[in-house]
Every structure is written in structure tokens, then in C-alpha cells.
Amino acid sequence: MATEPPHREGAPAYRRVLVKVSGESLMGELDYGTDPERIGAIARQLALVHARGVEVAVVVGGGNIFRGLAAQASGMDRATGDYMGMLATVLNALALQDALEKQGVPTRVQSAIAISEVAEPYIRRRAMRHLEKQRIVIFAAGTGNPFFTTDTAAALRAIEMHAEIILMAKNGVEGVYTADPATDPDATFIPEITHMEAIERRLRVMDSTALTLCMENRLPIVVFNMGDELNIDRIVSGERVGTLVRT
Image (cartoon, rainbow, N blue to C red):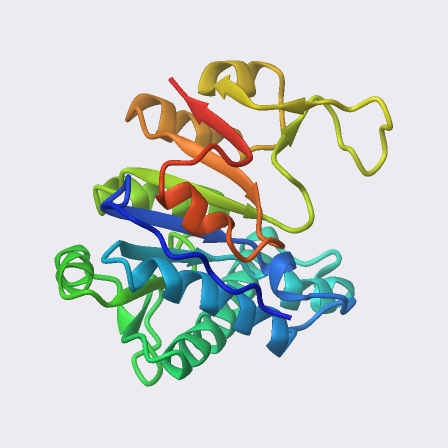
């Protein structure tokens, strides 16, 4: 059941944000695939902050769909497998676009690989114009290149869009821990850490290429639990939620 959002006073702490939504966070309780209720919940979170005047860009992963293709991809050429993963992110982007438009939010999907019948090509200036016109922009197909993750795509697009922060949505995890809390009962929560510390300690924030990009461009990251439907609004309001990663 959706939580009734509180009435927020004052201006948001951020004018433009990029939200990284993993494919796994779209699965809900499914083994793989897309849970319509989960996508609806994510759309409500994004619509809530959009209504406050925040410019929102989104990068989606494809793990929820690619997990179902893992057996087929086993032993496959890495580049081919990565292109399959890119196509999976396009499916997720279209599903999220539909959910957002049902919330009354104008949304555009831009793909880093040409698929003009269902998505615009990625054009930086056009994407920035969409944001300025209060449209949510969903970036699909990663960077358009194999060997780069959607985490790297999130860092790259955030820098290109001049986003003020990346919001890394996790599935059922409150933030960054010293170890995987699912397997290590002694794992402890880390409320704040630097990019360099996260890289050196190999913590599960995002991949090292993405973290390095964020560090070099002094772009902060908040890692938070997507399960609480008020978390994005809390972060945008300036509240401390999850783990803050900054230089």
C-alpha cells in the first residue's frame, strides 16, 4: 500500500537529479521479469519529486530481464551479451515511461542505440531541453557500448546533464555496508564515505569506472533503499537518507 506523502514546505535541496534504478529493483518478488506494482511504486516516487519542480533524469538497468536470459548468454561473446543487456534496459525504460505517464508526468525515453520506432536517440542538448521543460528523461541502452555497465552510464549521463547528485536506488538495502549484509551478519552500515575510500575498500556502491568518473567531477552519490516510497522525496528535501558518497 502506498504511503501518503507528507506536505513539504520550502524549496527542494536539489534542482536537477539523476536516479539510477537497477533492473533488480523492478522485479519485486519475482525471480526475473517486471513487477507492475513495483514499477508503479517507483513511478509514484519520481512523480512526487517532479511535482515539486525538481528536474529528474533516470538511468535504468536490465538485470531483471537479462537474468532470465542468463542460460542463453552463458559462453556467449561478451560484447554480444552486453548488447542483449542494453536491449533489456530499453524494455524497462518503456515500462517505466508508461507508468509515469499514467501518473500524468510527461516522459521521454532516449536510447544510446538506435531504436527510433520506440525511443529518441540520445542527444545531449535535446535531453537537457526536455529536463528544462519539466519532462522526466529516461536514458536506456547504457552508454551504447559493450564492456560498460549501467552504473557507468548513470555517472556519465549525470555529468553530461549537470545533475547535482546521483540517487542510487537499491533493492531492500539501506545503503553501503562494510560487507554484504545478506551474507555477513557482522556487516555494518556506513552513513558517509568518500569516493576514494569506496574504491579502495571495493565497497558495493557502483563499479570502479563509474565511481572514478564521479570522483573526478566531484559528483556526490546517495545510496538508498528504494523500498520506502518516501526516500527520494526525503533526499530531495535535504534529509540524510542512506549513505552519502562524496569527495
